Length: 433
Image 1: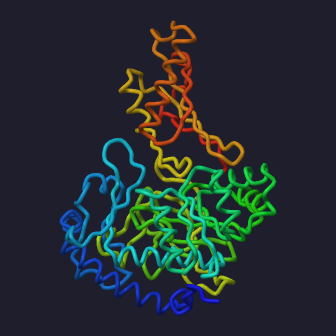
Image 2 (image 1 turned 90 degrees about the vertical axis):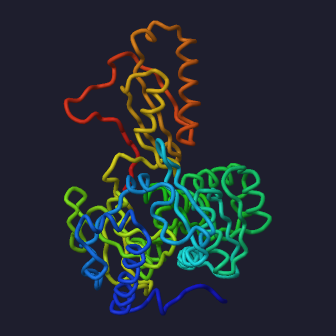
Image 3 (image 1 turned 135 degrees about the horizontal axis):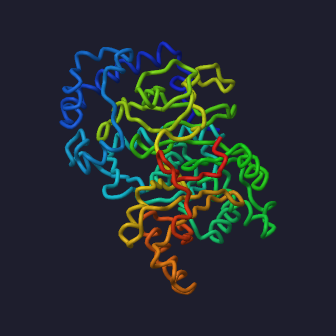
């Protein structure tokens, strides 16, 4: 039975991995310096030249990149190859104003799909499997990434995309899907729907690869029980490539980072200081094989821990823990990036003051978001019907901005607690770790 496991890469010695990283980093820094004026300026401001970077030991000398840089350089400011050599873009869900757009050459797509193929293989996938991809397609990286990875493995691939649950279940039963790829919240919903229809004995699923949103170990066990599978975590960012930057193996004690393509660091989010292995801090990635959109020292804002402890699966690439939170105010709700600034923009455009609170809960394994908004004194005298109409208007406006449904509740003036310091905008009641 053929599969995509690459022991010569995934089980390489630490010395070999380090040699790859040293060589590829030096080459990548020169590539970026020569072809990306935006980053070259950042290097010059820090007094760094490509000649200063001789190995991974010199990585700390390079300046960071942040999501703000990606927005400032939008759309082409960080592209390192001629546009004629780019064959695709992918995009994040976006915030106020400019979206983050990532570019790919055909070589970049091949490497990204290779990373996703490793994730599928680590979950037990082979060319004998039927991989059911229920991540969104289009600009979202989930569907295209796992779709390409499944092709690399040689599996029969069902490009289902998200939604239309009746059709999902019909194909799952009729075509005997064995590996499910989607967000954990949708996997939980599929499990409930399958059991409600009495079809659990009719499905052939053995594993699931779930990512794009936070989920707990409790949720993992619930999904495994409802679908009769083993559930694996996968991690990635559009800015770096998409899903497949790291993935769980059978040990499920962290996600192996594809170190032949990405260098990971943990830094103090306040000082930028690189922290020793085993420390909890902000995850930073450097892409060392990407051609079109090679980000150096990109701050993910995800808080986690790296470990090189020996793994029972035999893979030697460093492992990252599940993200334990964020160093910024971004929320991930149903796989979508949500910033308070997006909500504030909608409210101000609709004539409301910036007095609001975002409450996120997880109900029946599904994320739910409610935005409580203070009415102006003039609105407070409106009838219940008028208030309901205003709430519906805000629901529609937020849906247009965020891309997901958010419940809106208009509350009395000055009823949201004030703070002498930074306003408490977010109450996240989910257990993220």
